[in-house]
Length: 405
Image (cartoon, rainbow, N blue to C red; front, side):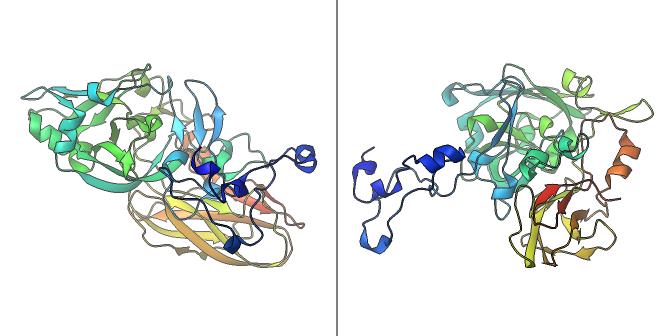
């Protein structure tokens, strides 16, 4: 409030106008005609976005078991600001005092140990940039496809951050994993007491107990004060508000990996423990509700990612999949991370159908909708990575289209 009273701050007020009220939209902020003639605002304790930039998560279900989606179409590069990272909760966000936080590691270990948050921070740390994705992300691109859908509504349950924490392998060496242990249970401190079985091999590979995100402590909705991070794996396994790890010789068959988070197949069987997220991509520009104002050159841009490693290539089609051309990938193209792709396109004013198709370093190619339905069946709810499409109409309006033929 003190800063708002100082010189120049009044320039950012937002008066209501009859025109704005009639349109149902907020008016543009008022700023000086010549900012060189007016002193600006002084330094502040906490930075804010420009009042002209107001990206927001979209709350899809305002329930304790709800979610909010990242505005993919409003972002640049690959890093998601922490306050825009998607949310998915099963019983709301718990309030946890970091001084009372405890993590128990026990089961098939030599030395069962309780770690405080301070203990975790004393161990050697590491940071990794990687994506997180809800395994149910992409439902609006798989069934009940609506043309009035934004990238945020289609695939907004994925985000990329720079995570920092202690490698889980260090904690397991500290407690001494017993011979014969092959799995561990990760259990959360939320009201759902989320629990998932994880193969022990993932701990030795790249798992961590993360306590920081993008240079600051985790946000509460991302698991404050500590969470499990499993790069490349489905989000539900990456238990937030982590309170207990139990080593064992077999999976625990929890509710979240039996009645939920399995992939029903067309032959009435089901895939279980389908941890890795498959290669996927989505064009984030141009996309609904954007309207191309004129013919000419436009840059098609989007994101691609794979839980199996690096994105090797992204191909783009502007004619519904009849012809494909290689897009440019921005550096850095990191493993298990969002990768930005770009493709220059000369729109001549006719109808066009824009598609993107990702290939990862294992050779896996993002499937069409028809290919995915044939492999998984129409009723599956997870790992929905089929090709997305956008239709550009002759008047420049862009709508969410059907998948490629």
